[in-house]
Length: 321
Ligand code: MN
Ligand code: MN
Image (cartoon, rainbow, N blue to C red):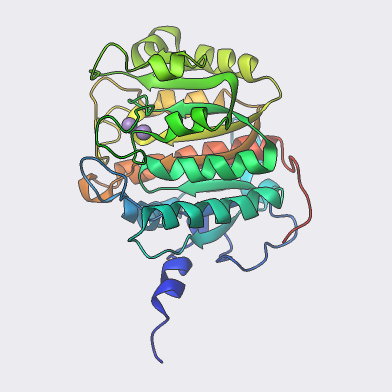
C-alpha cells in the first residue's frame, strides 16, 4: 500500500498548528503537555454556507507565522504550555451523532489528562461535545461565548435539535454551565422573535451586545467577566462571526456591526488570571475568506487563549494517558 489509509490521513492534518510537535491522537501526550490543539473538520451543522470543515487545514497553515513569545503577558506561550498539535479528530463525515461522540471522546481524553483542549472547528455545533467533555472532567464551567448569535435555539426552527444554532441551548439544558455563568459577547443583528433571548435569560445568561462592548471598551468588559467568573473553571467558545465581517469575512453567517479584531484580541488578553480549561474557535469558512484574514485572526485568537493557559499552567494536571 502506497497511500496512508484515509482516516490516518485525516487524523494527521498538515503543517502542525504553530509548528508545534505533531502528536496525532491516540498517541500518548508527551510529559509536560498542558495544551492540545485539535481540528474538528465538521460542518454538517451549518444552516447556511458550509465549508468550515476546511478551517483546521487553513488555520494550521497560517498559524506557522505566529511566534511564541507574548510581549504583553511576558510569557513564552508554547514553552510554558508544552502545547502540541493533536491532529484532527478522525470521523467519517456522515453521522452527526457519531461525529459528536468522537469529538467528545477525544476532548474528554485530553481534559481528563489534565491538559486544556483547544478545538478548531468546524461549525459551532462542535462546541457541544467539547463542553460535554470539559464538564465531565471539571464539572460545570463558566462559559464565555463570543458570537453575533445567541445559539440558544431549539428544534422549532428546523425540526432538528443539533445544529450550529443550538449548542448553548443544550449546554444550559444539560447543566454543563454553572448557574449565571454564561457570558455572551458580540450579540447583534435581527432576531426571529422577541423571545429569542429567553432560553438564556431564564438561566441568568449575561449578554454584552457588540454595541455595549464598543461603548464600554474591551478591557472594561474583560474586567467585568474576570470578576464574575472568579476562580471558576472557564471555557471560551469563540464563533468568529462575533468579529465584524470587515475583519473576519470568511464565515458562513456574517452580521455587520461586530467587534473589531483588535477588540476581540484585547478582550481575551484582558482575561489574564482566569482559570481557562478549554477553548474552541469555530465557523471559519476558508472558501469565503479573503487573503486568509479570518484564518489569521483565528490563529491569533488561539494564541491569546494559549497565553491565558500559559499564565496559569497545569490546572488540574494529572497523569498522562
Ligand atoms: Mn454566529
Ligand atoms: Mn455560533
